[in-house]
View 1 (cartoon, rainbow, N blue to C red):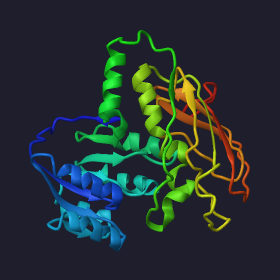
View 2: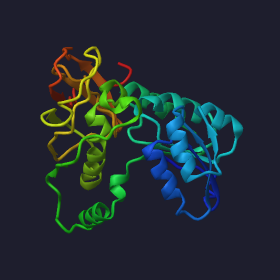
View 3: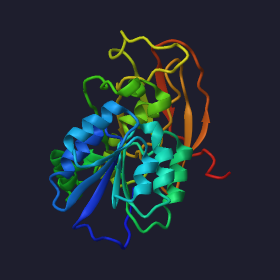
Length: 298
């Protein structure tokens, strides 16, 4: 999801980092390898995260909030690496400026907020870009290049399965809850949706996905009134996959959830969520991509 404008002097840029935890510092280390890139500001409400990033770029000005970073005008471009649920508020402020923006995936945690960002970004001259880095990994980039070149003929099916360690511990355990992450299909599987679209070069018709929490986090305990984010146990198969990256909603752990979507000009629109709430820490999730759901605004 990229908007490219006319102000494209990319030889010398001042970067700000909003969200200076693990991912923010990873961006800092990568930017250090780019000629002409200068990290001038970091913003994070967590003192530990500010210290962590400050050690990597001691010359950068530190802020406790993103508004102050924006107001001081020390940046030409901003990387948003704050927790998923904060993206919408940060982007509302950033998209009112002429700053170039790279926002970590997922764009937002709800479909409505993603639509809002699309509307706010419309007509901007600066770049607005969602970071989906899997497509740039050398093995995957080479694979996609070979598929595009016709090395396997016409693709008929794409299957992706990832085996990984449990989600990392984050500040305040924010990534343990679906309300904060958007759910596993949003937090992690958006990478896979992106890769499937690139491989197939086709938009979604229908997708079936399922997952459950069978191994990870079973010894963790949280307030039962809060929903627990499922671990990544998934198997996605299909010749068509979602066109809108990170837009699938997750009803949270504690019951089943069925969600319908309508594909409309490369976007997805929620139809309904017939989920049941509950206190169980194990759940089985089902999401059905429904091409018959009503269009946006209907």
